Image 1 (spheres, rainbow, N blue to C red):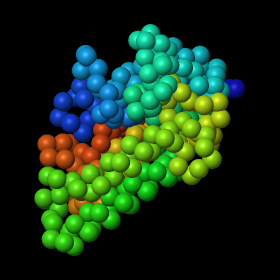
Image 2: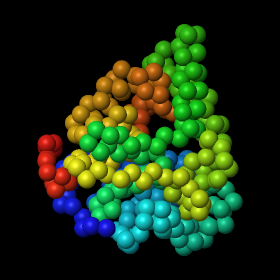
Image 3: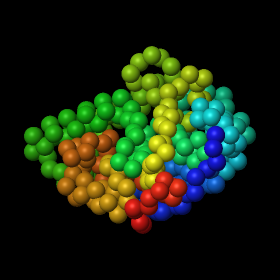
Image 4: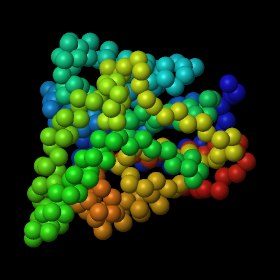
Length: 291
């Protein structure tokens, strides 16, 4: 491997869907060789005495782990090591047997990483990346299913006289997919050979798992890492935020313009937490974007 190219962080931003910043489950990591966005998964099945949410806890564990990780590890070995840090947390808190038997009790997260020396994007779970104009995503088949079912239920409610305003107060479409969302845990980190299998960092990543390893072209200058709290990703934060505002304004229930498993609940900033990190590789010979 060659040495890391000169890099600068051009833009970084994190905001939770709730008004209380402590409830945000997205996080950023900026190191000397590693740059990452971590998206902790919301899990209402677990509550901790100190009040921290499972998604926030997973994000905190993984950000700390990134700062300690051997950067010479390959992508797959790195993900296995990071996953092991969550397993270590279970063991330290005498929870390993409980979470092994019941996936609903696990903390989990998705992650997208840029490794500057390897010049690779590593993506496990629901995050996304934009390399100049090339979008790299990893949407789960089960999400496409639940989003379509929710959209169908909302359309049927509107056809029967409901309004977007009343459905924002009482999202019956979300209620209709609650059981599907619970059932999807059956496929989490399981190699069942179905199109619904999906993989996340939850302490039980199997030996055989799918992830995206995307080589960044030598001439690429702009690399954006983001969580899936952004429906569209652009090479600047301003453009990405503008696209989000347009979606939220025109489709706050998120069932037409962009289908999602939930809309923007009253009092929330958005439908999901969001994180955005843009880095520039100056050695690519150009630096056309400015924060």
